[in-house]
Image (cartoon, one colour):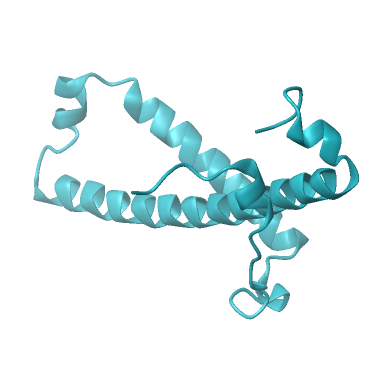
Length: 122
């Protein structure tokens, strides 16, 4: 039977470095980030315009084979953009979780009486 991990259990966990998985040399520079930010804004604005159409209006955009091919291609590019965004969120979430674990570990080592009584995390 498996039970929910306690804060103490989580604080004891260790993680391998991700430096080999994602070398910092491959991270985007300022120009890449500026372009990514502009691309994100364009995608968000375009999607917001599309979402204003009701089903009938949106379906009418698929008026012929050429238009349908355009929208299918557009959807493929949107999916690639979504996948990139998800990858970025995974990096941020993983970093956030590891910092939380370290903060909890610090508190357990330096303030054990607060962390183990009813007023602390459990």
